[in-house]
Amino acid sequence: MISKVHPGNFFEDFTIGMTFRHATPRTLTEGDRSLYIGLTGTRSVLGTAETNSAALGLDRRPMDDLLVFNIAFGKTVADISLQARGNLGYADVRFLDHVYDGDTLSVESTVIGLKENSSGETGVVYVRSTARNQLGRDVLTWIRWVMIAKKDTATPCPIAIVPDLPSSVAIKDLGAKVFGPGARNIADLTNRSTYWEDYEPGERLDHILGVTLYQSDHSIATRLYQNNARGHFDGVLMNGRPLIYGGHIMSVANAIAYDGLENSLGLLAINGGTHVAPTWSGDTIRCATHVLDRLDFGDADVGALRLRTIVAKNIDSALQIAFPDCSGGRARHENSVVLDLDYTLAFPKRPAA
Image 1 (cartoon, helix red, strand yellow):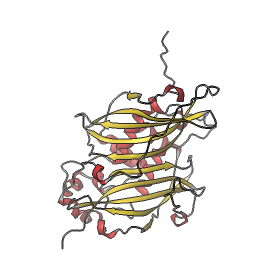
Image 2 (tube, rainbow, N blue to C red):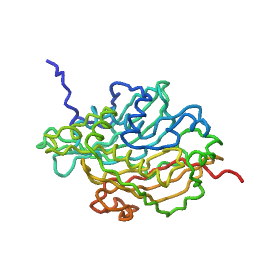
Image 3 (spheres, rainbow, N blue to C red):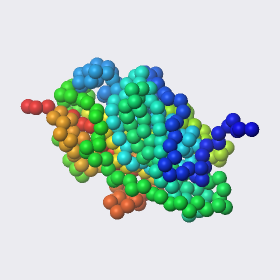
Image 4 (cartoon, rainbow, N blue to C red):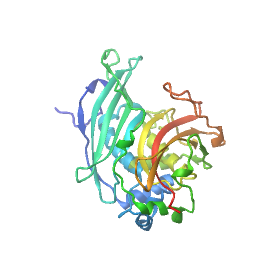
């Protein structure tokens, strides 16, 4: 008989070029937005009110970029990472267009890399995933790599193909989000007169808030994204300590980083990201941000800031966070660090005098 229950794919089940059309396209609603605000504390000016979006030159209020990312990510879990031991990192994440209330997302993934780990118990699977709206337009694409359990640890898997991952998303690939001259009026809404020109490469922002993570918030958020990875919910499997979903860490950290980046118009790209260490219920996270670069992609009204935010747990202050050099490969982080994220924000330019 054909098995009616799908246990998820093990490392041996993946092959290079395998493509998944993930199940159950998802329509995003204002209910999703409200619940996301309650679970993460996001205060993004574009997502807070229709009048804000209209004042900044948009016809409609877009969904929060990380809400879109997490819902699209959740679609991939049943096929890619149900047997995951950990989601390891991201590259070449491009937020190509706004997503609105009523838009329906469908997601497709292709396997682009495979490599067995030296333990013989797991392997790393690299996939490129793309989310499209109901019009067939690509709105989000990303690469991620995930550690997957092997079904048979006694049988080696000799294939080892690691894709060449870009260190950043090129300016020409930053998508087609449209803002317009109204974006320069953002200070009227945020009461913060910091613009694209005011951020200098090398500048550091120590965000003042700390947020304690609770199992209830994490569980509801992860269910909101329809992410059913076992490690986030099964207390028996995880020895009484279900793992906090990394996308929840990203979303809460983004809300913390609002202080200092109030005039952000949203994400254009995640250049690279690493989940350095796990988090559990009861951990408290804080974050600090370095300005890496100020990018001008030719828009008269909006520029881009390339930033690096490091998130650490159970420390007294963001001032304690170090930014290790990662130019020669993987950075050596302190034990408290849980996330290292390199990303690009759209930011309004200073109004003409």
